[in-house]
Image (cartoon, rainbow, N blue to C red; front, top):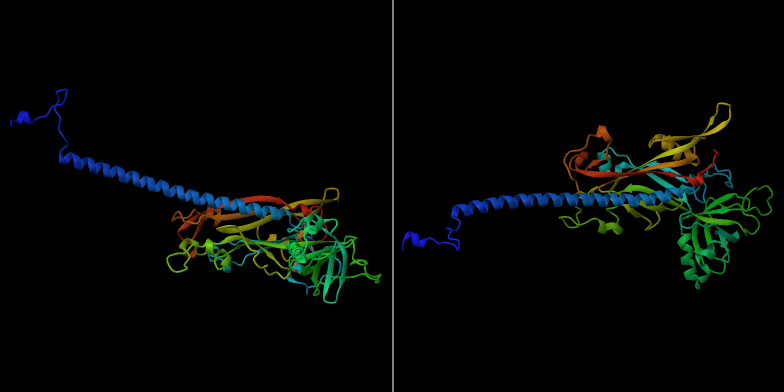
Amino acid sequence: MSRLARRRRDAAGNRSRGFTLVELMVALTGGLFVSVAVFMLAKQATGLYQSEARMSNATLSSVVGFERLRLDLERASFLTSPNLRHDPKRCGAWDATWPTYLTHLAGILIEPTNIATLPVQQANGIAPDQITLAGSYASSDSFPTHAIFSNGTNHVVQLETKFGGLARLGYSSMVTPETQKALLLTVFGKGRALRIVDPEGNEQYGTIEDTAGGDYPTILLKATAPGLLYRGSNTNLKCGVMGTGALHTVNVVNIIRYSIKDMSAEPRFAPLFQAGAGPGAIPTTDVGRTELVREELDTGGNPITDSAEIVSEFAVDLSFGITISQVAAGATGDQLEQLVSLAPGTTTTAWAGDTTSMGPTYGPQRIRGIRARLSVRSREADRLADTPVALIGPGLFRIGLGGAGKAPFARVRTVQTDVAIRNQRGVAWL
């Protein structure tokens, strides 16, 4: 067949032939380079998306946990003394033998956290605060009493059921002593404090030991210090339980602590810590992780069983500034209230610290506002270099997860708010 015959022509009469092997290899190689570039771009975009999603989750966690903290701060000193040691309404002498948190019972207590238990914070130069709040958190009610007396073993407080808090709580709908007791324990839990107010407004406090149902629901207080004062026929007492103790009012006082803690050893929170390469191992990114924890304490300062809650995961810092009320002399010699703001630090704890060692010119009852700041990190590190500390301060933008606070670094998000302490407004005594 001739060379001309081997040529193929299309309908238009134009010549047509396939790709040569060289052309095909060049096309495949070019396509491969384009595919690799597209794949790398997609991988980087996916990684960036996942990183931003993790940071968004951390930010959302901080906002949700921070809102819980803000609401609890607003309720500080509700139906309790802002400083029991110096409160003029306290009935009876202050006694250092009382349970730990009754000796310095205050609406607000700010203390430094022991960073020896927080190796990542210690390595990064971060020193979180912890705050303990006292107030009636389990109920917004005061409960009228039917009787208050001592049976030789306990102080017995019997409550009225036909009106007041127990009526609103639905006590009358509980038909057995067991269900009645279970309802009482939701408010008057064991180990919590009970505040007793006589008809003249004087206050006494005790520790709840148990409750019992019945026609007159009963709260049993420990007979240990502080013991209740009963006026009886003693005309020298100007405060205390009057007569049979009828028509006094009582309310629970909860002691709530917020702190940064490592919860990896707590069995209840084990599902939060995923298994790593080894049996039961924690992933590298979870080693040393800490959370913002809310827990309730008994009057002895011990955590109440199963009361701990993680309100914000991967929290790394918690700090508080305060606004205090001081009396200053005006231009004409008048006494004027002056509000002074104090940043977190030693001056803060001087006003909001342990009242048992506090000087006479200080006192948590003078706090009018709190500036709270919470910082959380992303679970995964995202870079090997830190932002200059001199520009923003340690741990505010990034935190080192490596040894000695070095690389890799994880991003940090910080939220802040100012909270007015309305329950202490107008309190001026020292």
